[in-house]
Structure formats: C-alpha cells, structure tokens
Image (cartoon, rainbow, N blue to C red; front, side, top):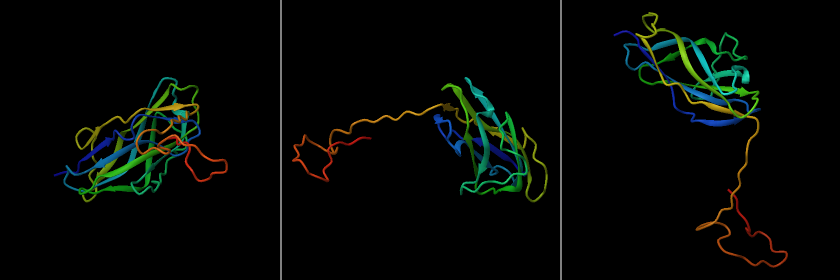
Length: 193
C-alpha cells in the first residue's frame, strides 16, 4: 500500500502559564506516525500554525525551533526567528519517519512580550510536505496525510507568582512544637513547599 502519515499535535504540554522572558519554552509536541502506510516517510517541511487569544499576537514569541526526542535542534533552511501565523519549517535534512516508530517533534520558542495576563498562544502542525522513502511518491493532504489535535493554549503573563505554604501533618518537619536553647544549630524549625 502507499505511504501514509498521521500528524498529531499532542495534548502535552498541558494548559499552562509562562512568564515573559522565558527562553526555549515548550509550546507543542507533534507526533509523526507512518504506521498505517506501506513504507517509511520522508518529511521535508512542516507549517506550524499559531492561534492567538485574548491580547496575544504571534510576535509575543520569537526564535521558534523544532527539536527531536533527543533534544537535538532540527536545522531548517527557512528563517524561524520571527514567528508568524503560519511559520514554515523547511528541514535542511529530511526527517525520516519509520513505519515501526513514530517521530516526535518538540516546538520551543522564546517568550518576549505580553501586554497583560490574557494573551494565549496555541501552536499546531497545519500543512506538511512529505514523500514515500522508497517510491518518492508525494503524499497528498487529506488522503495520504491526516491531522489530529490542536495543541493546548499557553498563557503569557507579565510576572509570575510564588506561593509558599507551611508543611504540616504526618511526616512534616518539624513534626511537633519545639523549645530550643539559644545557640542550637542544625534543627529544622520551619518547612515550606
């Protein structure tokens, strides 16, 4: 049978908030799966779509990059330093998606701005250029290439919050009220999480 490719933008990372100034923040995971087809698939380009919500704009992030499951950056011949609603990643070396094992891509970017705490960005794969490894036949979207998943919205915030709470109860340190002599050292008197 002919080559097939199922592209799924996974539900991980989950909904989250990220503070402006965070670099290499994980916005999406995209799984490439060729198991339903008759041969391995070579992927030469992926278009990453960014949906915005609230006060979000695509330029809230820059230096968008894709990484393999080992954390290696996938080199592209296209400029991905400035984000756009549809950002094309043309790979310098085609990605080989073997029938036996799905290939997972992690999308990361630098968060450079947000006007308030209502800006959201959601990234997912929207278009792909691929071919059969052995036949060289081009895969067609809708018949040979199918898409699933729209990722999770990530909220961009101008500052973070730190919440401290006292640890108490069984196994907490200290577990009971303590009376200490002046000069005592090495004793836990308060614990936070």
